[in-house]
Image (cartoon, rainbow over all chains, first blue to last red; front, side, top):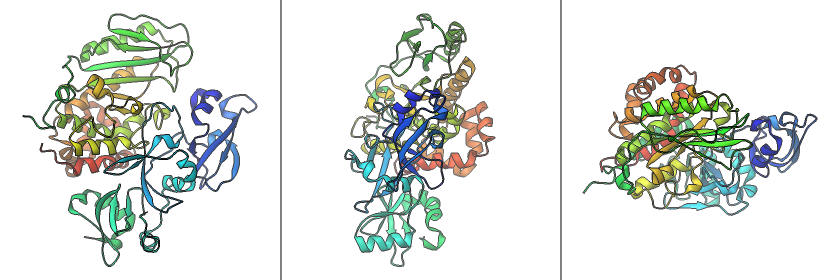
Length: 204
Length: 272
């Protein structure tokens, strides 16, 4: 990774978010990088902020090169689920994630995120990347209780009006017996939806 | 009057048709002094993203398949083993799409995206998730933007994915369409010998031609369901298919590739 070039590596990951290979560690924010005994990348040590807000140290080898696939993020602040997409931005030259690369995708409009958004959503974005979502039943309870939109997978969410959303598009409904039902034109997503909710929560 | 999908890329983007199938850009970080001139087919430039003794060698004009092979071999003959292995240096292949209809263009794009993760595996570990060539599985903005363009029936409105040079660090760079009328495939790390690059060029040329066998992206994805991934891979990739089919993750990766694009493939009308 990074041609074993310490300075180059740091310039590409400093102050960005990278995924850890350590189980349950998730997304970490790189705060600092120090050369090791051999002054090479393999022995470099990094200081990072965890999704729980703790500052820790580790080896650079603990980082995954690829951050992974984004999708719905259940926001930490409002609870509102937003479909977040990374753009192949040229000018920031960063390997890790930062807010400038991210867009809230809506069918009618692509919306840039406010500076610092990723810092405020660290845990929520980590959960998205790790594929951690509430089950459909919990999602319905949250929609009822908080009158907000909540995701149950990277691609699917329930809107505050109890519509089934696929990447922010209305793809179906929540039936009166709390099952999800796809509109005909979204039948291509049936297999994916059943995988997420199980046959028992899917209505034909 | 021709509909949006029936127009050629050249007409849609008001570009003059150009002969030639490929454009090639080879970024090189050298282990020794590199040549500053090759021949009339190559332009030699500096590239700010490279380090040390480094140049970018770029075709001066698109070339046909046979001439492309000859020129890539000639470049490597003159580079004479001085190409270092660098994550910064890529070999980018432009495939001329000016003569394609928009329907054919989107079918070619869909075909590539289905196989993108599998193909990138062959191009080096550091190309998977690399900031210089993000795949759809790393950065799916391109897929959302294509959806928007198809909805608008216009390549240049709103999303910017076909026009904004700031968005060109995708493994499949769509921005080059508006500038050159080509799709730019950026996923390959500059190899130290010409053979991997020639193989990649051949594969992309094959995929472009073979994707025309499907009437539109919907028919292409339908063929995966009807005939299976192996059969479609054999059609689209020809002699290059066997290497992909043999991978243990072939079906799963292909399935993920299809899922990443199915919304814009199936939610759009491909009639006009």
